[in-house]
Image 1: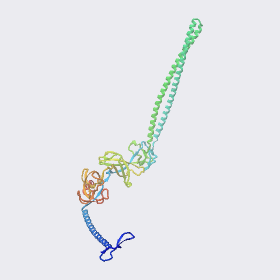
Image 2: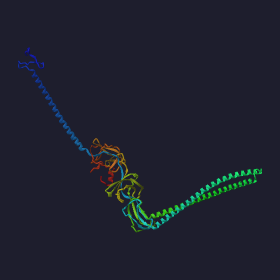
Image 3: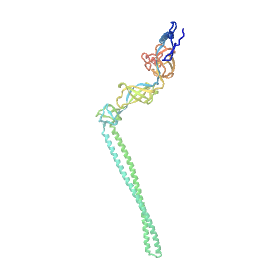
Image 4: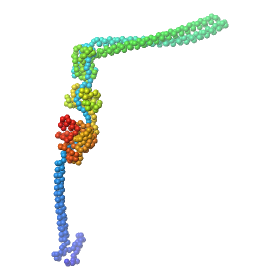
Length: 513
């Protein structure tokens, strides 16, 4: 290699870098650019080889994974084919109600047979069968003039005794006035007595002085005699005043006696008046028996006579009623409750009456009353539900189904009765799905109506309870759970091996589950 000359290197004006000059002499020497290209090409070859090796490994790995997934899928499919397919439901929140449903018949809330308590001819019968009547309305009248005459006589007797009482009260007033006059006369006479006594004392003193003067001959004796005469006169006047007082007191006593007599007359005549008034009331009552009025608002349901018929008094024997009226604004539905439900029946229990003649239309009411006594012939108890009937659509004699709520819903869960297994009193068990396996779980059971039963403990709303499967099942058996579309698990063709208490009841009664 030759040594570089002084001109072998130079500075470029652009980047001040030192660029060595390439060897121009000799073909065996390598330039720096050739070496750089060779290094770059080698690096590219190495990187390509590494990429190709990594790609081959990824392809092999993906093929292995695909083969593993396919194998697992085939394994799962074989397992699913071996697992038992079952239908499941979740326990429902809210317990069961207890109701009783029995046939019932509509009766009038009230009805009355209207008789006449008077004999006579029927007249003025203004109603017929089916007519609506109001309370107190006149329906018919029996003609009996004798009773009307008795009413008039009794009324005249009442007026007579009223006049007698007025006379007695006038006598009493006069006697009381005489008492007042006598008392005033006594007062005047007593005042006169006082004046006479005073005058008599004055004349007595004057007389004694004149006697003393005449004894000493100071005055003439005749003057003394005159004073004595005046004194005696005042004594007589005093005695007359005392007598007048006694006479006035006697008059007062007489007037008081007259007052007492008048009061006694008033009491007697008032008693007679009351007797006469009671007699008038009695005759009016007897006269009113000829008028037949409605005891309440309702409908005329029976008519047995026509205008002009002779009506016999009802007390004379067995006679037909003139009319019959039934109250229809309130209807009495009578239903007979069986023995098993009577202990749970209470006043106020909600009831629904479905009337067949009205297309099963529902009428709501409550239990109003029950007899508290079961008929020995069929062990049922008469129960009544009152139904408002302001529209008049309910007719006497209609019938339908009466459903009475005996007990409200409890707070327990409910499941289909067909899911129950191994029943022993209030204990039982059901199959539930846990980790794709059937597990037998014990539970406590409440009420059971054959369709659904209450679960008092042992389940939650998240549990999947098996209600339908084909074949047999054991605890721990793998299963595939499918939800049933029916809440009660009673879909078409549903069947559960073992069944529940409801299924047992159906089997015992010959019914097919």
